[in-house]
Image (cartoon, rainbow, N blue to C red):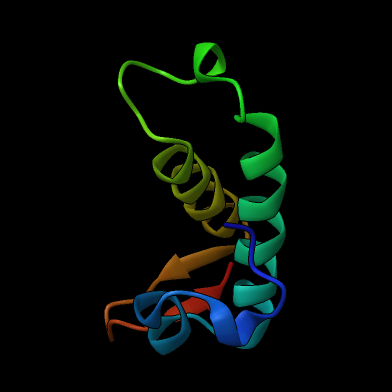
Length: 75
């Protein structure tokens, strides 16, 4: 289920990430959704959605870090 806009992202993503990080998340999720359509391309019993969320979080973590204040900040 690719996301057309950041307003469609899960609440946990929208509530905790800055807007730019949400755009990164959305783009990475959508790309991974397409890339992992074939079950053989995923690890173990991961669903397509689980794989896409993992890729999206990894993409965010390349540019943002969670601070001691609990908020995400650009690296």
